[in-house]
Image (cartoon, rainbow, N blue to C red; front, side):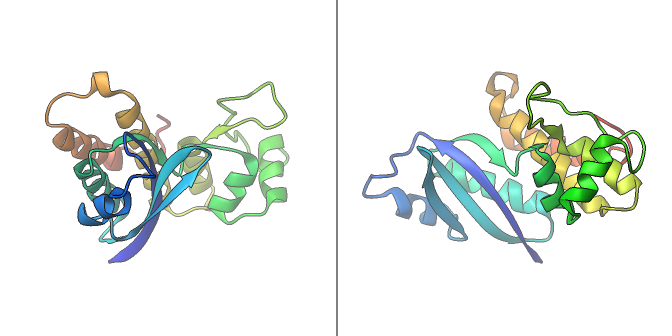
Length: 184
């Protein structure tokens, strides 16, 4: 067992209600810190589990017991250069060299805010590239895929069929089975 850190952004609960904290504690979120930030409620976990996916799925189920609606999962799969450095443990200078093409070849291109001074990359693609270049452990690639999958799942409720827990678990198992070098 190891500890896994992540957060869910939730809605549908009153952070000023008398039962707010108790509601989460009684639902099994006793390993989470409830944070009101930027007008949003973040449920920040440090969950013990055999692996990242088990930690995330069990936390997701516990949050649903509170009656809250999960809006987003963090860490997000869209990342800035500084976030790439932080997650990979590499220096910002090294990441800048990768991005500019001065070190390594075929670093992934940004996916969002491309015309700004702070573009965003898909962490799944970046982590796969870093793994291929022996800069990142494969577990980080799988965790990146899980983060993207969770966000797709919670942001596309019309796509989700009955038995959502079974569907989510199935999707995550399939993500973990994808070839590491495949770019989704």
